[in-house]
Length: 176
Image (tube, rainbow, N blue to C red):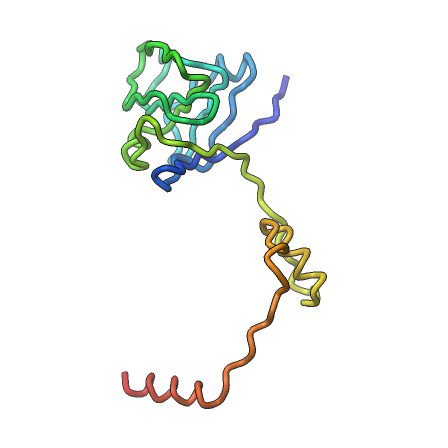
């Protein structure tokens, strides 16, 4: 039976760093059971988010990885760096889920206990077609697709620069 895989990105709001860009969500019984089993390594910027979980085992694993334990509000409540194969981690009482990330992800992102994480689903936006006109409706639609910026006010085109500014620029470029 085939299960549709969902991916999210993980951002540390406290440190303003990314932990991973493509984290597989393992929230089914089968997904949680399998986790990282059968893999030889984790790709950089990837991982597995096991929901719900407050501890893991690495029996059958073939590589070391980092473990971030988070509560229901996505606050970091536990960290385990370089968890080796054939180990069992102690349960973290306040943890609701676990992020399994490539080795050294905690160090690179400077993540610490108490940090606030942002975990969101990644969805690519549709690009604006090149052949479309640039009238206000098209710009508003594009702004809405790109993150709902239409409420910031009307789109005002920038006027072309005068010949005087261009001549100053060319004289400056000639000096250097």
